[in-house]
Image 1: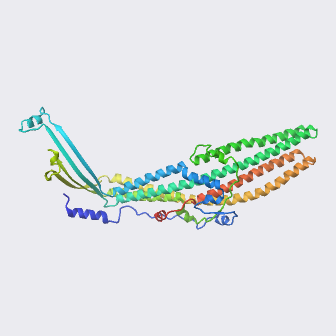
Image 2: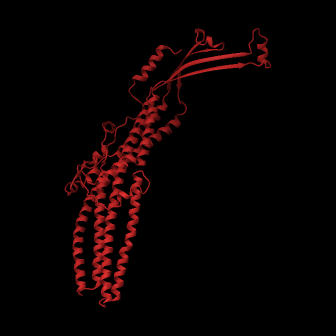
Image 3: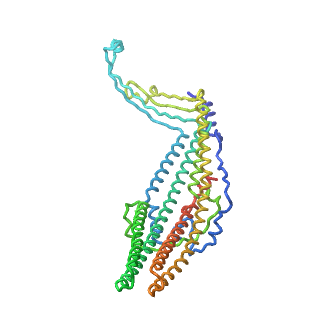
Length: 486
């Protein structure tokens, strides 16, 4: 039996020690600017409404957009996979917690044997008076074991498991943010393609009317055949752009259905009728670059992975030291009959103090420590790079948002001017002042400018979505998350 004094000393050493081998994790500082370069321009941009980062998609003022984003957050299969990964990490954390606690088990067995009298042993036993060839054996035991975490290896393992669990939770939030942004982006793309199709179809109608007018003049001998063929060629060129846009629209609608976790074509009827391109709202608050470290879930993922890699260094270092364990057993065993199983004579007990020490394996332990330190260095570089790229994402998105809006405003003025120029050229053509070439060029310029304006408007709204995503909008950090990364 283990002496009580020895047991008490080991127990107190295991429970009261507050230190553990290996480095204590401290979140590294990442040098970031105090303010985004494009923040001033964004703050002064004109917008019809503002949107809070937590539910930014509602700020676009499009109920259908809001509905699709809500459906995606409920049904998307990428989110389902992320939730499953969180459950796996939670189970790993539970296993790490259980490793710090004692484990127990109950064992029992009953055996009946029939001894042969033809073997040497059987012949000897058979010559004994009262020998019974039948034998019964019964045993019931309650056992317990406990690895004493004297040097903190198990606690470091629990730290690593906790950081991995927090990383998986943040990863699920990052997936949620990506799903919301991608759904909104696809929806806006669909509305932009529908607007471009409307421009192309209106231009087809305009070219058809022009061709009809020229055919009428040609029939009266007032127009040359060359002019007819020129108008037919211009009409064919505009018509050729329609199938390309329709194919792109089909792709975008199928992508939207997949984002919603449904087969392609499920929501097509809801999107058949063209709608306006949503207007990008004002960003209520961009915050500072340093706040991205607490707000962007992908940065929390990188930081928690760094914390886990730091804890694993302690797990590796703990292999330098001996592992102590306690084990005990109480039970009852008999080989006579079940009636004697729980009598005092059948009782049994044992206590064991275990020691495991990799005393001649330090070379392998050194390699494991170096490997863990290398992984920490890799995770540190990944975290710092993720912070820099996050800042870059925000800067690019804010710049695109402002510049695309400026481009849209300029193109709107240009389209108005080209529309008046086209009307003037057609009137001059009817009076014989200009040739058909001027009219066709005016049509082509108007089509190109109108299409460019729609594309700029679409890209401007998509840039707003990218800005909300880059800023980490779409979730609120919990207090536990904020404390974990301080």
